[in-house]
Length: 312
Image (cartoon, rainbow, N blue to C red; front, side, top):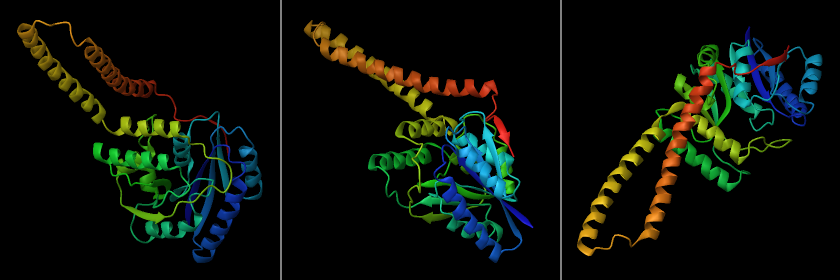
């Protein structure tokens, strides 16, 4: 018998969970009819929800022995939820998927076939459309993937979702990376392994509201840049060298102009603009250094990625 663990990170998903469970129950029944040697377990990760998410999970557990859960002591974020799911999964294969059904369970059959029969270590999904998403958000998302792939050695697919299935070998490799500041999409790419990409059209949530606003997505993107490339530091150094050279050229120009025209005091408005601009560049570069320093500081503390208050 083979065991497939479905990890479902949840934060305030009381409306979506019953719908998700019903859909997954149908999917698991279909698997039972086609592959009698495959068993399922549903592992829900309650990320410190403030609604009735945990109570609903417990009610599902009461009627279905395949349901397990881990409940955090507070909200640690989705990355911690994914790590906790992988850390507590017992399956020979592990699937990560959201409770809002934006990750269609209907793709599980194709995904499982890829890792069980076709020789892939993981089967991942990507959205080929962003229907229903604000245009400005879609634009910045595409630019993020473009920058990440150009500034790092990673190969992160545009539109990649967290929805994927992995073999136990790959799961163990991901768990071996115990960094506190996590960017799972980058980790998947960094550990390697043979990946099959499955395309599908974007789907909207079946219930509830998204927990990801523009600011949270921006902070998440910063985790990717800081965690997998030092290119921003190099860019800051290049900018510094450029302005040092420009300043030297300007000094020579001002000295020559003063000697020729004897007018050293004119042009102060432009000088103020230059000073303000350079001050902004300096603060930007210092901010980049500070971001890396802050992440290093958090890593050296050695704090746990999550704290489980209750598990079953």
